Amino acid sequence: MTTNHPAWAAYQAFAPIYDEFCRNNDYEMWIGALLSELEKRGVVHGRVLDVGCGTGRAFQPLLSRGWRIVGCDLSPAMLSEARRKFGDTVPLHEADIRELPVFGTFELVFALNDVVNYLLNDGDLDRAFDGIRANLAPGGLALFDTNTLAAFRSSSNGEAAGETRGEWLWEGLTKHVVPGATFDSRISGPGIETHIHRERHHTAREISAGLEAAGLELLARLGQREVEGGVLLTEPPDEDRDDKIIHICRASAG
Image (cartoon, rainbow, N blue to C red):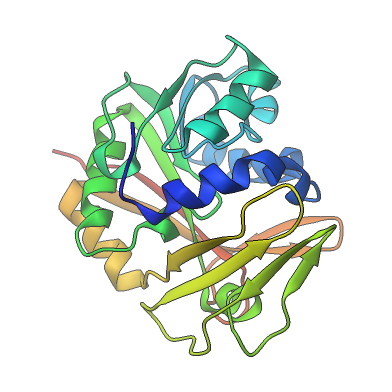
């Protein structure tokens, strides 16, 4: 499958060095913190659909806790990396979150690490949330994150210095950080083609409208930020303090 979505080209280029670029991200700690929030709301185990699974960095923390996983991503190159690491352990599919097939019924459907921020156009949220709801088992939960204004200020603001990770440089190209805007960043370095990532900040009102249109009920909005020794999740979230906002939803009654 090919797609006209800018993220397709970005992650085709990013795939060869993605795991090394993100090596300091502790998925064991992160997934553990998120699953604790789901357990408070009645979902402890079962089947999970990882939408935008990338190279499968969330797989091992889930597998070690007994979850059965199906993964999908729009980038064949990212899926190839996931398949190289996990073989046939996790079924993998090429799919765009805006046109998400029904892969089955899942106790958990999640889209983590900026997937929703790559939805750039009006109507994209509605289509994505429709697909997520269609894959939920009765009583299942959906979970996704969105980047805050604070995150875009630190990583995509052209007035700030670029961030060096090993041999690679992440450069913010956008000067004005305002709610609902799009932000461009450039990644360059050895072993990859220099490429652009374009993301959109989604306001709480936009998210709420998209969820309502898809028949999803928002159960919680949690601010997420890294602290010494772990990940801190707090309610309510703060766009100027937190790195991400975690949304937990379920299918609306009736």
